[in-house]
Length: 220
Image (cartoon, rainbow, N blue to C red; front, side):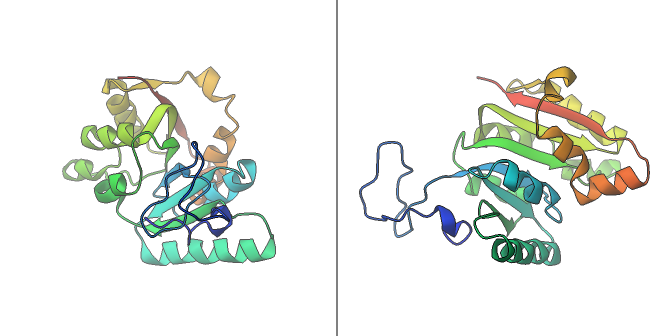
């Protein structure tokens, strides 16, 4: 994957074949990047989380993943506009159109990510569609692969049944442990997770409930 078109401000100025010991290896024929993507918003929708986190963590590269063509185009164009309106800002976020359930391991190395977000995912209410939910035993194995030890999965939903489904599957997985509510509330990301996505704002307007659960990746 050539990330230079997504994060041009993070392309190394010297793209010779020599790199420092702690610099990512230059892929064949691709520009050398100063950093790798660390945050992934899976099913990012209209990008509310990305836009809010961008200025909070300006040195961390973040990627939104969205399967809907028009939504992906909207977010990409908004990122371009924000970069023009605010020089030097919003350089650390980007979006790609993809099916997370099929292609996630193609984009990230083992242990590359430090944060993964599953915010107000499609509940797929019918039992026969539960296999399409974004948290399943099979998918958790992939998430555990790309998430580094100590990294965090953030989940939130306004559908209690889906929340309980995600909690149950994560509780049962040996590579994740739940973060206490007390500890989670100290995380500066949490207010953004709750309130800055379009779905989160919609739930707020409708005075609905939001069910949050965060999990830490632990050692094998």
